[in-house]
Image (cartoon, rainbow, N blue to C red; front, side, top):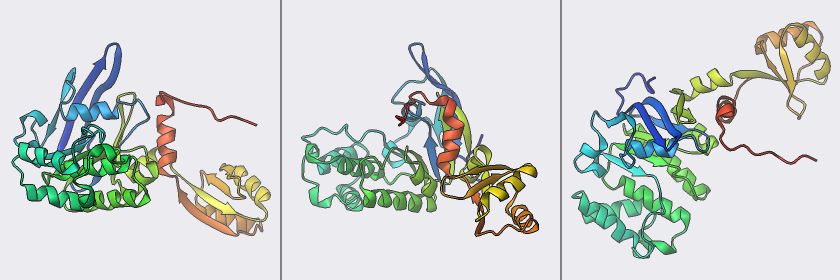
Length: 313
């Protein structure tokens, strides 16, 4: 299934498969990622997201299938940093190496200038600490350095695994604005995150997997509508009586714990008409959409590899 049907896909994965012993980490996975939008890559812990990204970048060898960037394997790209930027693990840099020197050797390996190193350091806010050893950096600072490395070659495509990990609220907002800006200028952005509220703000499209298998590849609104739908929120001083009226009309009614009724199976206009016909006063009536989090939890419920329990009492 295509993400961004109106655009030619840049990243194409076809029947990707990866096994670790008897465990299938990525299972016949096929999807496309288009330019000009932020595509979120979602799945529960252990679903195969990081392994999939490693397969795209040929850091792991696939047991089956293929992955290409504009029709070419990553390993066949010349000066790959100028084509595809990636951040998979911000902690891999040797602690004694300075941020500037780390970026300089990356730049040299791809024929980039020292001036570009200074540009990306300024872009991610690390100019003042560029000469410090990375071992002194916080996790958030390492994330910024990893993003700088991904941006170093000014690539048209970015693959980022949990780029907001360890960042403070200002840093998260900066990443959000950066990715939105780059996508708006035609870049291909493929970003994995567990921060579903953040994904709801920045993602235009989604690729969702569970236990290594594709669950959905579509726009965010389509995903929510397909797997969670919407509801009517209504408040009334006669909520109990209204709930009875609605149920007799075949609607499903639940309370949200704060006095509002959540109604499905009937639209807001019909709720208002039934309330008026039965003399029920309304204080609030609105069509509401479910959240990305609700849709994600609903569709991945059976694919959760690790599930805890909340203590009761």
